[in-house]
Image (cartoon, rainbow, N blue to C red):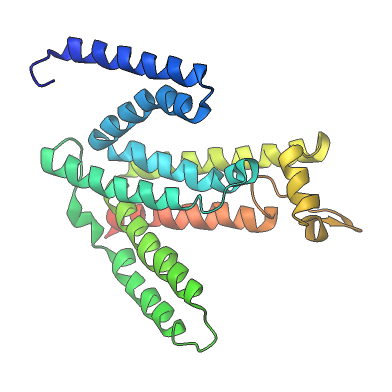
Amino acid sequence: MRGLPPKALLHLMLVVGLAVFVYAIITQNLLVATVVIFSPLAIITIGYGLQKPRFIYLMYATYAFFFTTVSRYIRQEKLSVGLDILLVYIFIAILFASYYKKANIKLSNAFNLFTISYVVWILFILIQFTNPGIHSEGITEGIRIWILRTLMLYIVASIVSNTPKMLRNSLIVIGIFIIIAFLKVLYQKYVGFDFAEKRWLYIDRAATTHILSTGIRYFSYFRNMYGGSSYCIFHYWTKYTESSVGNILF
């Protein structure tokens, strides 16, 4: 394999991939066929992300915004693990880009007012763990989400969103997400709920809090539009832009 020229190796990979795909179709193994179809895209994405950490950063923001909706359609739990995987990959990409000078990355930007002050919040969470009524699952989730993931996200945001241009682009992305969520609400109001939303409402019994005698509480891509709107504005503003402002001002 090492002695093959790049073109010959590429052709060999295409032939092997095509053979596996044909075999998967014949045997009706849709999982293998799907993996073969999306493998080239995944390889390209991984390779490009190592050189452009901000591209993975955008992928993280997109997945974070839509993963609740995705779970509603495919009926799978624990999709938030994908956020952890992307976040770890962003860290790897940042280190790679910094070492090989592939992007304008300064690791020193990780230390600013917002990331350092987050230590106070971590101490508060640790104090909450001493509550005798807390369950072990709550401790695990608290460490994973509120300590590790959020702190890592602040650090990543501080490193990749370190210019006014990136701050502006982050706000544009947030605006696009919020517009999409609003259009979904209009669709629910004037066209109706789709099959996954009806299943969530009437089988998962979410209708008890959304189909009320006083009217319908539309929820867009979220479990509840009021919380969803706040989530859009608060989560993305704080996580994706305030670290940028910290780097620019301090």
